[in-house]
Length: 143
Ligand SMILES: Nc1ncnc2c1ncn2[C@@H]1O[C@H](COP(=O)(O)OP(=O)(O)O)[C@@H](O)[C@H]1O
Ligand SMILES: [Mg+2]
Image (cartoon, rainbow, N blue to C red; front, top):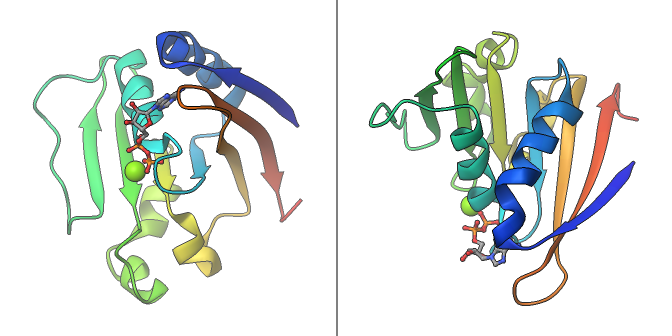
């Protein structure tokens, strides 16, 4: 478990640090309330992986697919609008999770039964108007 605080002007450095910290783990779960900064951090991460411009294609309004310069595809999921976890299964989330590409998940609590056994969790909390605190944890079989 590791805790890091940051402001927006530090976000690109934080993104690079997270990529290092995740190592081989490509499935990342971003937890935190609305406005905590999940999407903002994901955009900075995409930038760090040199996402090619204009190739974002939302699938079913839940999955955004991006092609990176050197690290294959990356998938950004936002499950906020999912009512039944089966909807996520129907669009093939498991294939994405086991594809070896980066999968970054917002509102993963909506699909709890289908989360992989191992993932990298980033919890975001407000420290102040501009400050955020990240708590990092590598999950393995629920621990
Ligand atoms: N240190 C910070 N890190 C991330 N976002 C910040 C920070 N400080 C302020 N913000 C602001 O907080 C808001 C976070 O929104 P967003 O990323 O959409 O949150 P979420 O996806 O968690 O709902 C943005 O307006 C962003 O500019
Ligand atoms: Mg968001």
